[in-house]
Image (cartoon, rainbow over all chains, first blue to last red; front, side):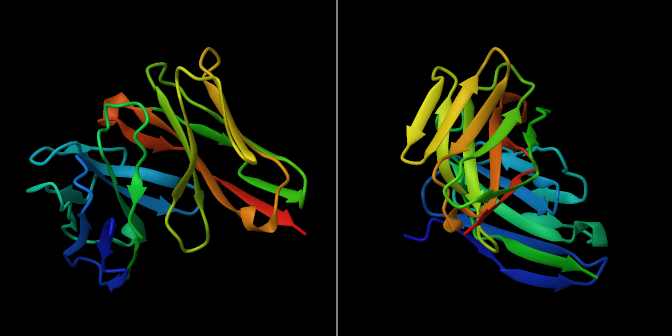
Length: 115
Length: 113
């Protein structure tokens, strides 16, 4: 059982370049999320999707876009990377977000450095 | 969005002592409050959670309490062990962001032998 998988695990990217972080889950979860983790700031929500075909903005969406063409995949795109987007990115999924006790399961993370 | 405050940011205890981490939230509609543990270089993993219709929940050495009136919840770890050393995050489910989890900034717990 793979669960939720992110790719790549790490990347060094030149500023101004376009980059897509991939996230795939095989648990048939309805909801998927992208968080970024920075020291001292915890996990901040970038974008979310509660079902295939719908997406929403989180706390820090600027400079990022997402799509949800199917249940399993939720790619995150940086259109033109900037150094402030250097971070560890976590994808997560949850089965039925409107229910009370539905935890979020996290991928292993992608460490992105923009130089 | 929901504001989740977490304290302390760092906590150092002796092995065998108890550790307490506290969180407050602002959205009275929040109804789910999980705690995640993250070891260095690893992904966050759920250790315990509590729903809004429950005041306390225990799982071996870990317990969580919830006070909905005061909008705060706490994590209690008893008989701490060195392997409890990690960063702990509280979270609250936020309806305004599609029921995504809104996280506190984390508590770095160090348990010294």
